[in-house]
Each structure stands twice: as C-alpha cells, then as structure tokens.
Length: 320
Ligand code: KDG
Image 1 (cartoon, rainbow, N blue to C red):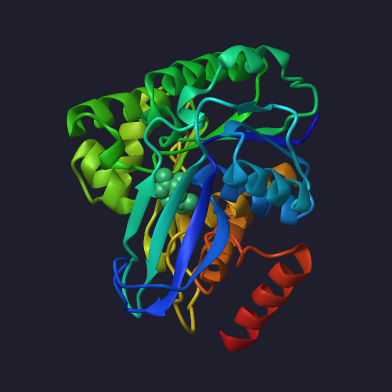
Image 2: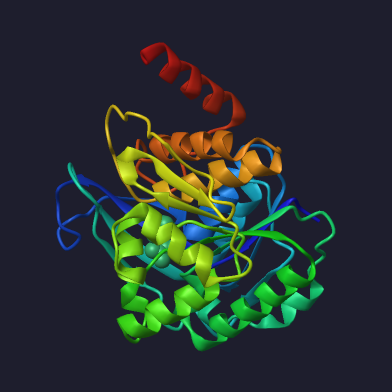
C-alpha cells in the first residue's frame, strides 16, 4: 500500500489558451488532469512518495484520459471503479491576465457522484502515513458524502494522520448554511485543518487568522493544528498547545493561473510531514509549492520534483 491516499472527483480540464477571452468566445483549449484532491496526489507522487487515489470514473474518453494521466504520474488506481452508467466530469477554465479565472463545470450526476463505497472496505491501510480530505467530494452528492464519512471512520480506526482543506464550492451545496454546517462537522475529524482566510470568514465569520484557528482547535477533539492560508502573505499556524507562528509567502514573478495553489500548499505540507520535517519546514515547503503552482496554466503542472523544489528554494535564498 502507499504512503498517501486521498478521495475525490477527477475532472478533465479544458484550459483556454486565449488570454482575457470569455469561455463563450474562446476556441483553443489545452486538456489537463484536474480535481482538487487528484492535484494533491499528483504533487505528492512527483516528490517521490507513493500515493493512491480513490474515485469512480465513467467508461468514456475522459475517464480513460484520467486513468492514463494517473498511471503516468505513478498514482495507484487500485481503488478506482469504472461506471458504464455515468459520465466522467469535465470543466472549462478561461485564461485571465489578472485575478482568478472563471470556471464552468459539467459534473452534476457524474460517475464520482455515484461513488460506491464498498471499495473502501478493500483498502489496505498498512503503509499509509497521511490522508488528505477536502470539502469538495462530500459536496457532490449524498452517496459521496456518506462514503466520505465512512472513510473518515476507517482513517480514525487505522490511526491515519489526516489533513482537511475546506475547499468551499458553494455552487455544489443546497445552501450556505448546509455547506458551513457540514464542512465544520467534517473538519472536526482532521488532525490538520487548512482553511483559506476568505473561507474562514464564510465558515466562522472572522478574517482574524487566530480567531479562525481557535474556532477549529475548539471545534474538534482530533484537530491539533490549524494552518490559515493567507495567499501571497504566506500562512498562519496555531497548534492545540498554543504554539503559533506565521511563515511568509514567496514572491512570484508572473502569475499565470491561481487555481491549484491551495492544493500545492497541501502537497508541500503533506510530503514534508511524511519526511518527518518540522511543522515550520513543512509550511515553508507548502508556501513554496503554492507559489510554484501559480506560474503554470494547468492546476498541477507547476508542482515540482524534489530537484525543482530545491532549485526554487535556493533561488529564493539568493534573491532574499
Ligand atoms: O483546487 C482546484 C480545483 O478547483 C479544480 O481542480 C477543480 O476540483 C475542482 C473543483 O471542484 O473546483
């Protein structure tokens, strides 16, 4: 079994190649593998750690494309089922010269939304050191949410360290109230909670990083550490024992696409913790991969190998 596992909805992403053209008008697109949790698996694997991705795809060209990309990235596919009845999700993303791109999803009723949780009983947890969960999978359907809760129970039973990124997608929820209540309930089961500062405001009503951290540290027994992502400002960390610190972000020469930065952050944190680095070192790496991610057009194609990561960190020291 692998050192890392995650569950999510994989998406075939068509990224526009035409800067500042609306999705309606754009004609030239490049195809990428996307999906928040699969992004994390790609990054973890690129840094040399074995990873396993749990999902369901459709028996269609997008499903085949996703499986091929997972194999290329050496991500385990043992717990991926294929459905002949439902399609694999896809999405369109525009290319903007400034700010966040707009995204249009084709995912309702997808194969992943019809995930059959019986596959979870076949998981071998013996070598798993960390698992990553996000608020997207439980938002896509009732079946996915139930499976997600069942996976949490299995992770708890097997004492697996867990990170949780709220990854708010309001369009997938019935109401904001339902989203906030469910995300906060699920976050309480994770050892490390990773809200973005804007998400914190929606989830608990404050933009104060310490107040956000305190909310999650008091919210759940399992939560030992909260890392609030501050965008270009870096990240604020608080732990149950009261330890707190801020790790500044890295300067980025040119932002090409902001999507995938948060998942890159998780990659840095998780891989450093698997390698038994200190929490501070892990957050430095998380910030670094977040900064590297925004310099490429796809979600995960900017994630580094160990060599590229070292070169980036060295270059930053030279520039400092
Ligand atoms: O974090 C990146 C994701 O936003 C993207 O890959 C697609 O999973 C996705 C989603 O739901 O937005």
